[in-house]
Image (cartoon, rainbow, N blue to C red):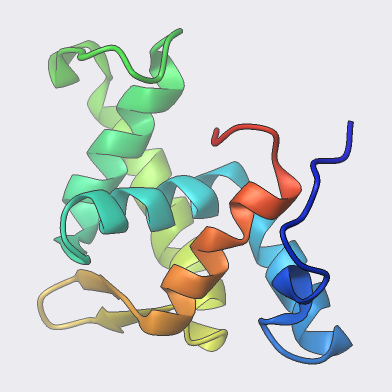
Length: 129
């Protein structure tokens, strides 16, 4: 089911059609959506290892809203998520100016463009995932 949009401009507010394609591509990956949501939830900035633990925990938990013990996620799984974030997802989001990455502190920060991108998930998803 396609959700109703409050305005036809809600999808194109990210820019022209090439930018819309970019936004849809960025939102297509669950880890990128989770990264953006986590940054928004914690005030806009977090260290990459912390983000990796949260995403790995969410992937290992059957109910994403359940509070879980991070110890239940193996160090190997946390490391695998951190590597994919560092080498794939953060660079893609940074290239689109959705996040900024400080390599010295390994801190990822949400930008205004990232907040705009995150708000588009409601236009393309029935419910946040």
